[in-house]
Image 1 (spheres, helix red, strand yellow):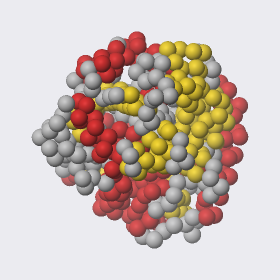
Image 2: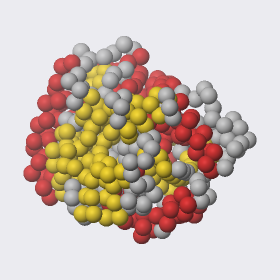
Image 3: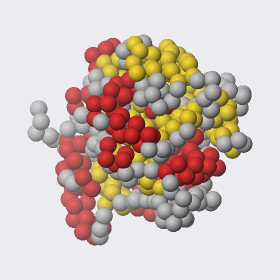
Image 4: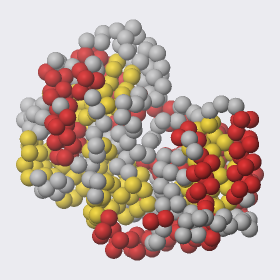
Length: 510
């Protein structure tokens, strides 16, 4: 077969990514050869994919997660267009894994036909290779100002003949209006492909919702294929940066006598904030994303994560007082960790004629390194050892590189080829590697050292926490939710046969 489906949403963050992953896991369990697809993603959370020739490319982390749910290695074709915002008005364009341009809203329009053809060709290639391709939309298909030239939502569905389902987040309120309005704002040919709805994040007695489900079916002629319950355990592999002040995950009780408190600075242009998720899987480790200097003062470990715009985010740190808070934390002897852009900020000087084009700017001065930005982006999957012989793996996505360092400076990681990577200066640590803390023994050793430096002698790491197993449990949970709460017979029929004849809703908007 060559089935397909588009999972659209009433809004961003309605649940498209997790529903797509759940459907992929459900189909994979049934023995179906399934692949995920998101035509265009806008996110600074990306993963590095390495092809058979050893070439690196970028895709959205959500599509890497969906590939794992499908039992596949990630492939650049699963997310052919990735937009990485560097400011409110410009984004780097990654096409089939490779950065090709930086655009504004204005000159993006000139590039859009090229991107659209690449998307349509890539989807056709995947549909010839896989039994089913589950496509994820972006934002909402009812963003009528963007319908002309659309190749992500209904433009994709129309071109490929895909049936669509629309997911809405009931936790936000107004879900029935959002579901009805999404269909009603579409032109008739688009409406003809929308075959059903899914309600996401419901809390309470499903019986109370039943009258609304009946009414939305009567009003639209389309069924609600299921209601997914609110689930606290779905927090790994977030597509977008996490909300201010949010505690990651559901930290288990400490194995020792004390908690370890981790504050991750939520930079305006944060990238790969998902690095903090591995820390949050550890019992007794409380990880909070924050923009408050006071929360840094109260933390044991401060983390500066990656950034799509290192120099601009460094200026923001200074303007908000967070730079002073980071420096004070380090001066107290407690640990500070910088990852990628955060590592670059910790140095003495940053020479940037590429990303911000600000020239030479002073860093925080907590590590004796200088960073220079080059025109070629480094994309690599890397491996090495740390703390002597502890194995560690990660991936690299960065323009900046260490161009000068104190010869006496210790490296955090020793690469497989013998090169040093990252830096350690007393209680300050830095690395360009994302994903390193998914290596279990490395994460435990680092947290043990961080607790020592923070004076948390009562903290103890858990010897049995396996990050890969936690991720796999999350993917299985998504598959379970689809199997238990959706009408999978109707969903299978839709994937296999396409949408039935459906009524047109006449909208008042002209």
